[in-house]
Length: 235
Image (cartoon, rainbow, N blue to C red; front, side, top):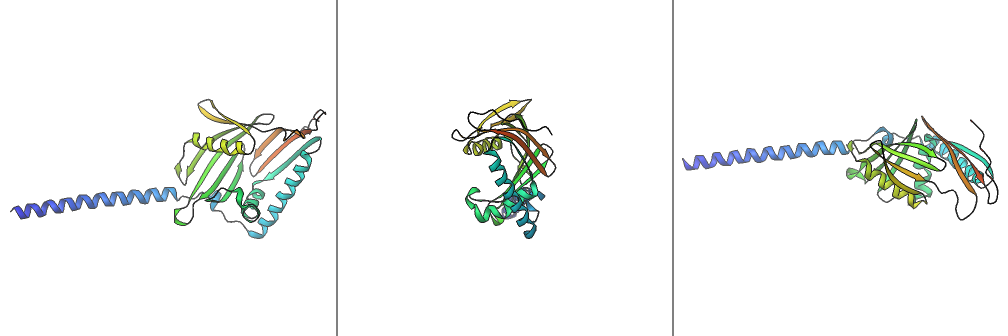
């Protein structure tokens, strides 16, 4: 009799342990599926030949903008997210591999009206996941941006906005910008002050920023030391 009770108790414990193991395994599968979710922003493939041409267009635009920023007068440019993604996929890993932090790859960007979506793959192989965010970007004033996190996630696992803005602010500060976090209407806003000059040279003013579907357009003026800025033409 005692032996039967002992065996029955062992069977019950085995069933309990098997149920716990199955629950843990199922939970891990769900977590893995959520984390491994890949938004189309990063998983979309690029045609190599067209990407090379689009990347070359971006390099030409950047060179022209750099030249315009060094001269007194108005300047402006328009950048397509297809050109930017082409450069990120081809020229960045080939010619500027150290610009991307270690462990990150396949960065992508998408422009929507007043929004910038960004995604990047963290890690490699089975241990990789896509980190992405949807940012609302506005020009608050001359050389002053406001950035709000509308959504952020690792795969499909949501991330809180504050750490994302803090990390973004730290990266922008490393580029010479002054940043601060401010609460506004129940949300945190990262305010970015773009430096107007480097080392006492030409002073540039970002006066207009428009982000549309697939394209970002910016314009402003440059003044040389001792001169007054020339107003940019109206749209």
